[in-house]
Image 1 (tube, rainbow, N blue to C red):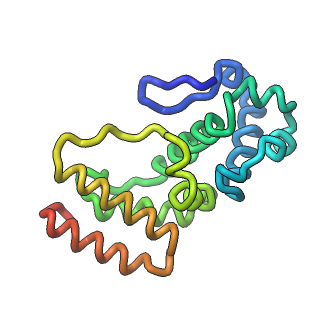
Image 2: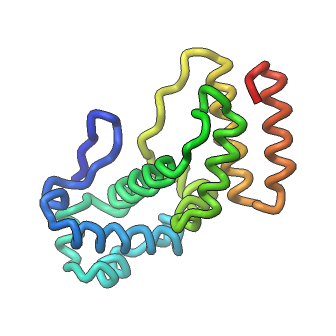
Length: 177
């Protein structure tokens, strides 16, 4: 089963962590492919092990179940996505940070994984989430930004309108745009 790093990220089992890097990457690639093509509810271990060229039993030595594997893959994908964002942080400029995240997600090799996460999977499995802000305005900002991300990923044609609404709402909260 997985463990949690000091930073709160989901990590794979110790057995998985001791695999050589090439095999870890092969398994991760298979996970990302599966979860990019199928919502978690339709994902299959059989397809993952076939693509990764591992035994089914090995999968269960690396991960407790599909939810566990999903949390691991999500952590890796979101880490890559955030690493590609070089603009302001959410606290400094939530509107630009949200727009940058959406741009990075749309250009990312993981865009289908991210889209399925926000449109189908986010309510099915608990992934490491930031602590709920103590300040009500910070909570409102985070909620609005995450809602905008979900809505844009669900319907990219409405991105301009959704981002305009986000900007207006943040302005009403007297938050930097």
